[in-house]
Amino acid sequence: MRKERLPRNPRRLVFVVLLLALPALAACSSLPNIDKLLANAQSQAQTTFVYDNQGHLITTLHAEQDRQVVPLNDVPLQVRQAVIAIEDARFYDHPGVDYRSVLRAFGANARAGHIVEGGSTITQQLVKNTLVGTQRTFKRKVQEAILAIQLEQKLTKNQILLTQGALLAGMIASPSAYDPEANPKAALGRRNFVLKRMVDEHLINLAQDAAVRKQPLGLHPQAEFAPYRDPYFIDYVKQVIFDGDQEFKALGATRTDRINAVFKGGLRIYTTIDQHLQDVAEQISKKTLPYKSDPYTAFVGLDPNTGNILSMVGGRNYFNPKDPYAKLNLATQAERQPGSAFKPFTLAAALERGISLSSIWRGGSRVFLRLPDGETWNPGNYEGINFGSSLSLLQATADSINVVYAQVALKIGPDAIVEMAHRLGIKSPLPSVYSITLGTGGVNPLEMAGAYSTFANGGYRVDPAPISKITDATGKVLYQHKVVKKRVLSPAVAALVDKALQAVMTEGTGVHIQLGRPAGGKTGTSEEYHDAWFAGFTPQLVGVRWVGFPKAELPMRPPRTRITVFGSSWPGHMWQSWMLEALKGVPAVPFPTADEAYVKVRVDTLRNCLPNEFTPPYLSRATRWRKPGST
Image (cartoon, rainbow, N blue to C red; front, side, top):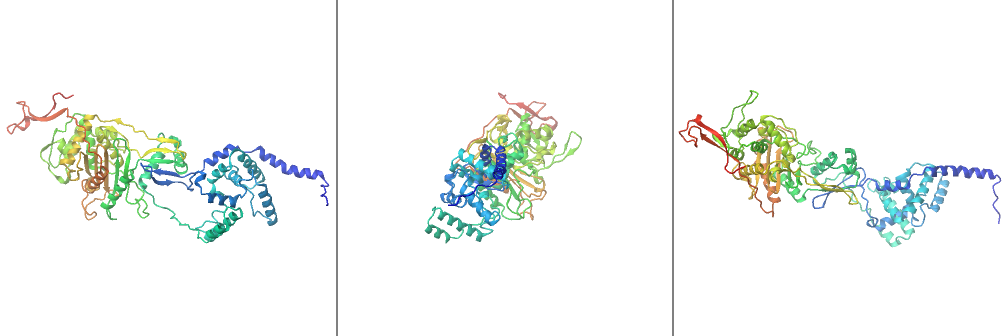
């Protein structure tokens, strides 16, 4: 046998070896930390899941990539085998670099004169995708090989396969070229090639191969964008997180960080929404206002003792591309005049200042008041109704009498009313004007529901909450909602407001929408029927319903609407329907009671007794008396 001759010039051989070795040594000297590889692999963008209050999935949130990391055992064996067969047949045999594949690829590329085959293992591709990048340089390839060997010494084969599984979409050769929707023929050919490789590797037999080849791709193309449930509520959940600098700081220090956490962090967001009650609220809305020409409606239902938001209707159809108001959440973003639904805030402020429910006020259909600045104010009642020459504050609340509440506002001042509304939970800016008592400032249903919760729970402010808990993908708790109750009304004042608002239901404007159990409520209709409200509650539940057109200042009267819309019409009946369903099986609970400390009566000042028909008007004067034994 002929012996191979040694090179005639040993110096040339040494030079070639050094030429190859020096760049390799340089690559080794600047190797990234292998631990960074694992951290990068684990920080890949993951899909966030949003659940209702029973733990049922509502929807998912993600950025460009919809990725969920799952345990390796959850990946079907055939999928794992197919990936290994086509990408790295000797995956379980090599130490991170498959020298046979490298030599085979080198020969194929040399014969072709360009790169036609790669020799990278799954481990090398994991290193490339997460650490060293895809730049085609000698240094990068050396680093990739060394790090792949190091990684094999740190992790088991299954751990590597699981970690790389998070990057599978980017790892598989030419994913766009083999897109089964865009290129079905190419995808079918690629599938059959993978089947051949699985036969070659003895992972399936010829009969199985033939059976699968007869099958079509079997894919069901999905719409580019699929509508999801509760979109207005989901938008509000996202907004709360994005804006929650302190409350949600575990998700990121900045708004941008929190946005990334929601769309890429693989979070599990557990909300307070009750899917049954949410469905009921939406069905009631569609049944009551089914026509395109009908006004819009918004609704918020919540638990006054925890603040948990149980239902939220924010508009008509979030996914209607032809509706310019489709994405506007009318429950949280629109500021509309609440009309007389604002009067309970004036009532609470008046009661705190010692004005009694039994106090007597001038009646009539219109009142002429001189303001401190010398201007005059001439508010009138709804439809010009005259309820009598004098009446109590309790009756004025039940029948929603504007002329009395105008006098109360003049007595206590607009600053007191605005302060009370903000104290109870109204967050929208309010003008400090006397007409504020008639609901001329803009508010939204969510904050109205929060404020009315204070009446329902006996005087505690409990802010509305859409989220109960947030965890990461591993179950680590990042946020846990804690109910914070702050007393903002004395029990006596809260009970007296409840008494007046119960009178609305039993003998006033809400008499036709009773629940058959103790309940309080208040109608509200703004000027010219632009907005109609009903806000009502029991000790266990609060609901606020608004009806109107998103484009403000459109009166809801025929012929624009099918009926004249006011607080106890569509809003009140929709509120009643939801409350009756929500309270099924819930025991009726009475409201706490509190005796008034004061009573206001008219007295004959000459004889110091109750006036009669012979008492001259100038001797009849209203006097405030403290009840015996009251404190």
